[in-house]
Length: 375
Image (cartoon, rainbow, N blue to C red; front, side, top):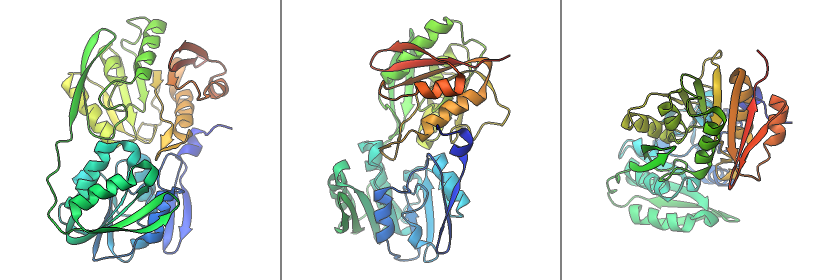
């Protein structure tokens, strides 16, 4: 049975000594071996600690009650769990941490977000620590841990691996030197889509940074062929998992009233900057799937190029929730376009939620289409 919208949004409490930790589908950091190893390893040091990739908060949980622990989180889904658990957290990027303010920093390497994001996170950790402060760095040797550990030592100074379990590692480093300044993080690239030119802006870590992914292009081609060149003008469109705007910007230029919802803060900021740079109007909402929408919000068209990874693992919770949200959020007669890898079997889910579907295109990716019945 597929994951319903209600089940996706449900927060589950996990009792632990001192309180409860809330988890939910789509929120990383629980039953994750890197965060698990951190949880077994971290010890208090000094008075103030910072977790730069907390997820639901599992890795730095042993520090609670022993230090003042702050957490910077980019995922709206994870932030909802942190808030429900009563853990001190704010929605922010790692490099927004205060410089020289912490005795201890905890960082589960966000290797799935790419080298530029990891390197910016390492510089952020080095800058956040006072001289003499410590960094717990955790990761997977099959996903670049040795390389990033070497880079962390170049930034901080002394460091040693203190725990190993299978391919997973936790290192402890001490800051012996002043940290370098943050590098320039914003990047831009141009693309021609359906005959129009766009300049996209993005921060590190966003999906398909540096080029428009071919799946999104295929969806837009299928949508235009199905609805015609004027088919979205004046229509209310929801872009589920909008990223930096590969679908939102073209749909806005085609005359649609677009709402883009996105779980990742770096992507939301990138989408907002792209809209401004191209003089386009659309809403960019930081949202755990449809959590930021009003309960009554409904749309004529919903599009999605859904994610199927959470923390590097292939997990379809979010994508399943996208399909259920589309079925709930479309007006009668509204249409849904989904693009995915051919090996992902969304067809039974569309059959279940909409009663029928069509395959519009199959190339390197496939575009599926469904219509909401009723009046």
